[in-house]
Length: 362
Image 1 (tube, rainbow, N blue to C red):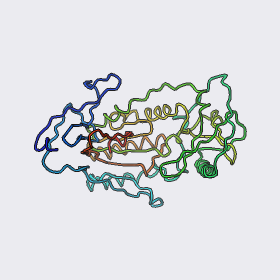
Image 2: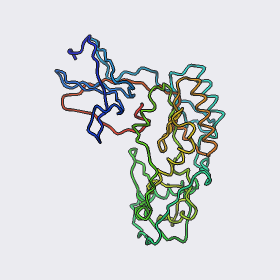
Image 3: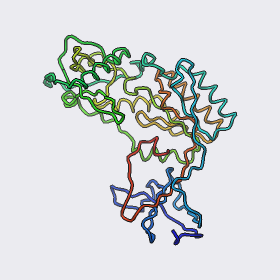
């Protein structure tokens, strides 16, 4: 790093536009990342926030550069519901004492916005949104043959089916035209997640052409807002009901019998478009002003603490109107996400990862 000691370096940081292969596109998003060759390898200077300027100045010194430098205190967690002390929400550590007090008071007045247990999730009214298959007329019905499951997977399916029945997400069905098989996927923590192979049903459904904006534009629109609140809908897709005539077309095999979805499942065609249409319509007056939404990722953006309290309260009123519930465990309020990372990697090595809209700003 001797080359950069006690020097001020002007660095132009731009986004490479993969469609046009043009790094000079003035409308491209600007990212806080820069690589430089030095005697001992490659130095990468990277920021986790987007920089809304054409150039940035990096000042270096003879001091040792930390691997990771945080410029704000860590978030802290607080339990809101006395009956569910294990379900905590995260609150930004940079908020003032008065701001934290007001925020906690607001949250405790709106406990009904959260789904503390599956039975609290009653679903978005059909008058607001519901998912329809719109299967093409004359398309042949497909009944998949029942596939055997290993003992461990079969037990996991039984447990998951019981949970979904109690939550009102699935119900038993006796007469069915379409029939699919469950597919078990192992999570990173070793637990099982149940999906359903809707391949045949999806082939019979036309494509919903409702457009989803590129996530880059959503992330860029958060620039300049110091306070951000990240919201996560509880079992997001399952809060939207299936059209009653389409419920039994979602039937699938289990060792306990045949069940079908009454709420919108994952893995079904056009579910993303249905969800995006719902949040676009529900938050139409807020998107771009104090909020951004991308499918099931909701981010409140504010300039000041007082604004943040008002924006959260406005969002809660909208959520209550459409009866959408939030997951308290995936809830971060008032976080000022402005961390700068300095990494020195050996020559020829690089580090890349896929991120969501929330983790882009972490």
